[in-house]
Length: 451
Image 1 (cartoon, one colour):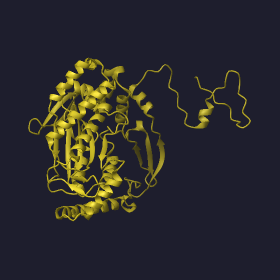
Image 2 (tube, helix red, strand yellow; image 1 turned 60 degrees about the vertical axis):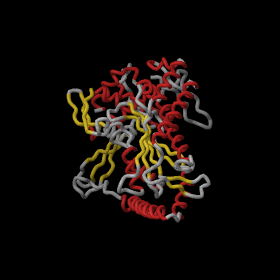
Image 3 (tube, one colour; image 1 turned 90 degrees about the vertical axis):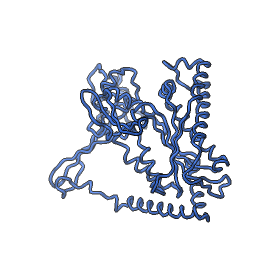
Image 4 (tube, helix red, strand yellow; image 1 turned 120 degrees about the horizontal axis):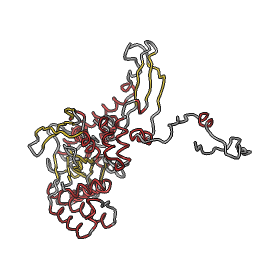
């Protein structure tokens, strides 16, 4: 779909299309094609040729990042604790001005949502009336709904317990109950809107176009009051039935760590410039439904969820933060292993066995003997070996954007030099004649090629 309608979308946007949009479209549409370069292999027995094209590696590409996601899940598996895990979802309410503000200030608003949700959960868990312990959070940002409309929310995977403040015991939460849902939503609302007010006072919000009315303090305060009156929805789900140990957590993460707004399996049909895809109607009881969009509108909605470059969409807090995870997780495992409580001991032993078996399976899968593949064997004759015959270099991001945008050129395009000899043969001497070589450096001075 993106290859079909990307050029039409960029033409309709014109100069309003950002470099980030052009870069993402250029990379995704060129993914695993000759435009990204690749390698040509020849069988030394039958002479068959196989071409392998490079993938774009963009995190918004629906066909890439599978291998990187699998490696990340294996790293997460090593940090899991032998306790039940809970799934928390915190959503921003649907409000036209808030949706516009989020799209105009994506990095600031998304970071504020991360921070507000994490602070609320850590604060509630530290309250002795609820848990009275330090917990860990693994958070994943999603910005889309089923119709690819703006719907910012975070998925949080939380272990069912935490370290006591003196780090001498493990505090377990009650079965099938983590924290009160209505308190989570109210606390996140207060922290998020307070942080939004601080950003407004610091002048860090982009308020242009339809958001220009929010520059006035009275208008901004009145708008915040309407957001305070709304109910902010939080969702807490207990461990899945029949699944325990690391498999329960990986079931959550494998589902929500995906970084694209829509997958290929949801596409139904494409004809006469319109795209039909399936979606789940949660307001209608979760029934399956379909909707049809124009091709350009499909691309526009897809690009609404392109994250700012360098933005981290998977973050850890508390016991799972990068700064403290090794120390706190090691302490937590030691306390869980030494616990003498019967219920905790039985759960821990079963979960530890599951962790050990999963780690053993991971180690065996990562061993050289198991990872050795027959990718170098010819698929045609099944006897010969593939030998590398040619390689095409991967273009730079700027070259890809230029190709996708198809800019007008005032002069014929010149072939880029690829070797030093080729580069040096194209140099021109200064008008005053050849420069005198330095005594310690006999190579002539390089001057700029103005041709």
